[in-house]
Every structure is written in structure tokens, then in C-alpha cells.
Length: 330
Ligand SMILES: O=P(O)(O)OC[C@H]1O[C@](O)(COP(=O)(O)O)[C@@H](O)[C@@H]1O
Ligand SMILES: [Mg+2]
Ligand SMILES: [Mg+2]
View (cartoon, protein in one colour):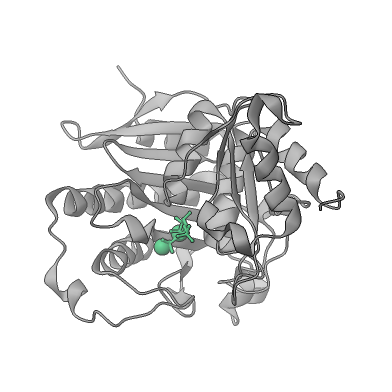
């Protein structure tokens, strides 16, 4: 008899009463994720979500129908949960729901460029305490460092519907079983292999990279004959959720550095609802996540939509990358 998500959440809440609202919220979000997965699997997104093809979100990305539908689905889940405010990639400002002890930060649909290509996409979420002193100014609620997260996770809409989640007690993976209409434990404890020989980066941006990133990648490409003295493989999906799960399964390193393009001075990925929750899951699985030099979870975000360079994965490789910063690069 597998352990179901509800049982795991109940056990966690019994062990630590402060996790009760967290457990309730994750259970509601799990129901929303099943609805989103069904919409993706049947290619049936409700028509109202299609209404405006010119829509752009707060960080300048075109909003697709699935972005809008996922956002609506998780907002409804938040409304049914003890969530004070809902801070989403798809909303300019946090939506105040006016009750509850939690602030939910969410990327409702991650990997938007892969919608329509039948490649895995996902949802990334982070739960923070809703602090009394910021109730009048909810953006401040999201300017807490990632170390304050109570829980974080990703749903992956792929060949399997998965939930990778941490409540600060390790990282667990659950799989959705349609015949049971519920998530069952798949992996008791995820652990990122310490060292690995696979890297993940959008190499089409090479000409824009800083010198240390180019040098790090060139040394990996040089393989056994180069300074790293080993062969590396390369994988890049273009869905952060899929890269994260691959790294949890078999190690490696993901990099989205800052680069010279306009608007990429802090990279592409958003700190509050992408980097922080991924970093929490990865650290709880024994990996590391930095902006190149500093631990992601120690950074204090300036706004809900702030960006950060992101490097995460096997500890050894994240450390090796940091060693290239400040190295002589010609
Ligand atoms: O196309 P690029 O520049 O390589 O960026 C890919 C990255 O952008 C993202 O799609 C950003 O997330 P959204 O799809 O939620 O905007 C990540 O999933 C992915 O890692
Ligand atoms: Mg995203
Ligand atoms: Mg998104």
C-alpha cells in the first residue's frame, strides 16, 4: 500500500503543528495540478483562456492560454487554502485574498516555450509565512530570503504527473495515480549525486556570456583531453522543472547566467517563484544552488518579479563553476 500525499502531509503537520496550513495548501494545489494535467493531456484548454493572444505578463513574456488557465486554477486553489496573498508570474502584483497565514509565490506554468511541443512543462511554488508587518504592502511579503520558505515544490506535467516537494524534511517525489485520483510516494528521499558529468545551458547565448562562463563550458567540452580530464554530456530541455527533475535523478549542473543582452543583467529566471523553490528542493536533496558565488537561499529579493542568475545541481560541479569566477580568462 503506497503512502499517499495526504497521509504524508498529515504526518508532517502532526510532527510540526506550524505545517498544518502548509499541508492544507499543498493538498489543494495537488487537486489543481491534476486538472491542469488533464487539460494538457487532452489539449482542451477552456476557451476563455484563449481570448487575448497579445497578452504579456509582468516580466514581458507572451501569455499563452495554458499560462492563463494554470494561473486561474492555482489562484482558485489558493482561495480555498489558508493563503493571505498569491504572488504569480502571471500577475503584475500579489493578489490579496485577505485571510490565512501563508504567502504563496508561484510560476503557474513553467516552460512556456514548450507548450504545444508535447515536452514536459510544470508548476513551481513556494510557501512563505505571511508576516503581519507586511499585510498592508504584500510585495514586501515576497522580499524574504529563501531560507524562510516553509515548503516548496514542482509539479511536472510530462509522461508522468509528478510532485517534487520539500517541507524542510528532505525532498520527496510523488506520482499521480489516475485510478486513485491521488499522488502516491514514488521516491522516499531524493538525493542529488555528489558529482556528475552532464551540464545544461542554453548554448545559443554563448556570444553574450561573461568570459568565466565561456571558459567553464569550453573546458567541459574539451572532455578527457582538456583540463577537466573527463567527458561531459549536455542536455537542455528549456523547461526548468524538467531540468530539475533530471538533476535530482542523475546529477549534473544547470546554468542560467547573467549575460550581455538587454534585460539579462541578472539572467532570465525569477528568484521568488523559480530560483528559491528549486534551490530549497535541491538543497534538501543534498545538492547546491547559487547565483554563481552566493547561495540562492541567502539572497534577499527586491521585488516579487526580481531575477537572478541560477546555477544548481551536484555540489561538486556547482563549486567547480564558482572557481572559474575571477580566474584569468583569455
Ligand atoms: O529559452 P531560454 O532563454 O533558454 O529560457 C528557458 C527557461 O525559461 C523558462 O521557460 C522560464 O519560465 P517560464 O516559461 O515560466 O517563463 C524556464 O522554464 C527555462 O529554463
Ligand atoms: Mg518559469
Ligand atoms: Mg511561467
